[in-house]
Length: 300
Image 1 (cartoon, rainbow, N blue to C red):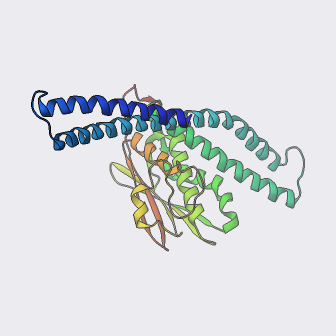
Image 2: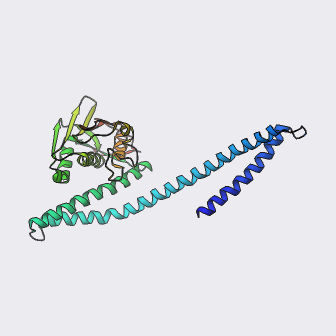
Image 3: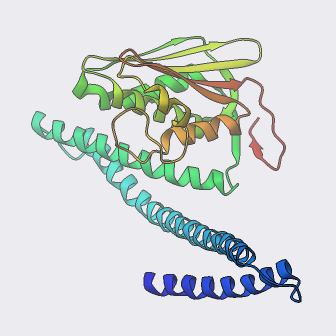
């Protein structure tokens, strides 16, 4: 397949070079005038530039087509994966509650590890699907009045098991932070930020969620005392498929989704980091969000 592609490009390039050279040469010499070596060289240079433009356009078009095909395949695959992973996690929760019968400490430890892994996998799948939905312009907010403080506590109650191996301590502080927002998307964003903080926290580290507010805005910060993010990577942490810090795990879509969710809520997300001391991600969200009926389903 590659051989055929390069053969097509080669043949097309020769044809374009020949045609372009003839027309450029005719234009430079006005056909009836005497020609010179410099005019011939000039005609071939111009034809070479035209070839470069055509080849670059061709390769770029093919490259983006490959990326689109990859994204579409990835979205289909992840969509098919979500249901079985959700089922696995549901059964694990069922067993951990000892509804089918008692389990011993060793079994509980193994089941908790499986439950954390399934939770992380489900989060990755949801990130991929949500980012695809936002980029396709199909994401609609469902606004409800909610407390970011209470939502954060709910996230911590689920996520704190992921920090047990490192003995990480969690806390939620600050005001209630009541806003009009999409509870599902905001919960997923906070989960992504907390998961990211856990990943980069050291042993016996801390993850703190701090909620502040003024008359118009609520500021939700997720603060860790981890390794920090190198300054040269700070500008790219919210980009698609980029990784924060030095560790290479996950899809690289968690922070990207947080940015999209903040933008959908007419807000933004910022990051501050000091190497060796930790990182703070802050979501800036308006309190009284109101969107048109085309973009939002408003629950009163």
